[in-house]
Image 1 (spheres, rainbow, N blue to C red):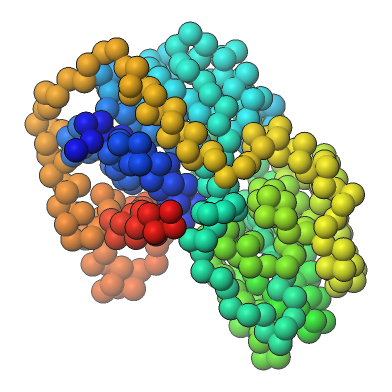
Image 2 (image 1 turned 90 degrees about the vertical axis):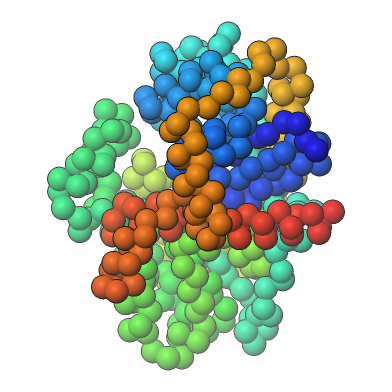
Length: 445
């Protein structure tokens, strides 16, 4: 019976679950009991699992920093592994590397050395073991882990399958109340990149309209099977309305994939990937050895990076997109960009090789083996209360963010997921999903 318990807090069921589950899989094979829980259960896991180690996705909020100090007093180790850790911009990297004075963090797992160096320069040196580890979810582009995805359906009429990925999360804010937008962006407005956020929203909105011109040109050619994957921060309404207005013959060439779907199997099954200016999806396509095209819009600094763009094949005209696709399918190796992509991946993602999750698990297991302070098992009433809530919801197959009244409103009134509570619920991992992914990983090996 494993004597050590590790809790991995998962923020988004589609983006983060598989990567965290693979870390958990490796921990279990090392004799460490691993528990995957929704990020909002961060307080409940103490009573439910009595963990020896808790892995957060961030600790840059006062309440989380306070909690890490509370955990340290109880002998519980803490670590951070970011969901999005490229941090291209110097100012954004600096912002994400600030250390709150009340924080007690034992380990910080970085995607790249630039972030590691920034963390060490901002108060983590001597307080936290900062380790460059890479990106766990990128392991699923390598054997044997990519076998977890079933092969996609054969291309329609043997046409090449083109994957188009949008990146217009800012455009979603254009039609929301001004006070809501200002309140949301106020937390980043002190940084130059986000200072003029209203202009960024307008630029992103215009770029999305321009993107639809590219998409229409591809569909009208009737040469490809086209898969449209929207960004997780984008809603469906604008795309669904646009698709509904298409002629039937064009709709037959298009597969629309909602934003919540996992991007990895779509990349593995495509013949060519098209992204919108600076986008991590292009990097993932390089790892999967897929040719890429980058659509160019207004080159607004927040969304465009010239160094990154040079590693893709650019296209700024809907009139040229079809011929550009044909040219890249004819030479899918894109040898002119190959070396630069390898250098870029080594710099920003620690050279993905399929072993990142195993290395995270080894670091955690080693930390537990070498821990000096014993864990204190005495719990308080609130610990038991939150643990009871977590276990009760798990027993009925629901996450910790299950809000019965909100669910009744949604079903009876047909309310859409406008509230913050519903958004938290929709992105939270479910117990059945956790069991399924862990079983699939076990079957692979």
